[in-house]
Amino acid sequence: MTKEAVETWVGRSDEVAVPMLGGEFWADGKEISGVFESVREQKIGGFAYKLTLDAAVLVDGDSAEVVELPSLTGVKNAIQSLREKGYSFRRGDLWRVACVGVKKAKKEGFSDSPAFEIGVIRK
Image 1 (tube, rainbow, N blue to C red):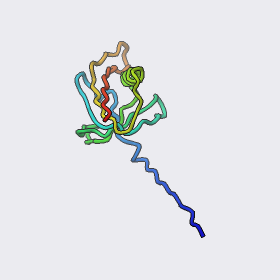
Image 2 (tube, helix red, strand yellow):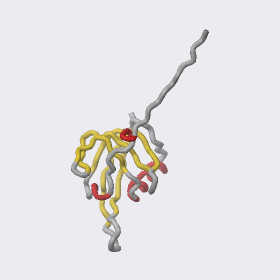
Image 3 (cartoon, helix red, strand yellow):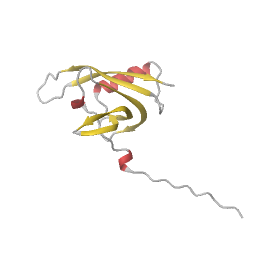
Image 4 (cartoon, helix red, strand yellow):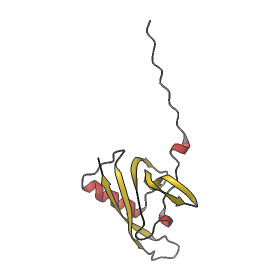
């Protein structure tokens, strides 16, 4: 008599919902580095990129080592630039994300727009 293998999975929201490094986090010259973990589609706005950081950062007053980089315009542009150079996401890639300037909003009520440089090393 053969036994069938049983597989089970458990998913937790806290494995996906991690602090976001939104526009207010960034300033010219500020940078983070860490290991790329995953990408997920956000309900609004595009994709978010999950990183386990080399050094914790403060997000809304709390220390965080695992964060997401949301689909800010500058992030989307830097990712597009990487893809045009042949990059495809792979878990374990080493990312360095640097804010290389902040463009001030021209209209009242609109947010400033950080620009980014994303460097990737794959071992």
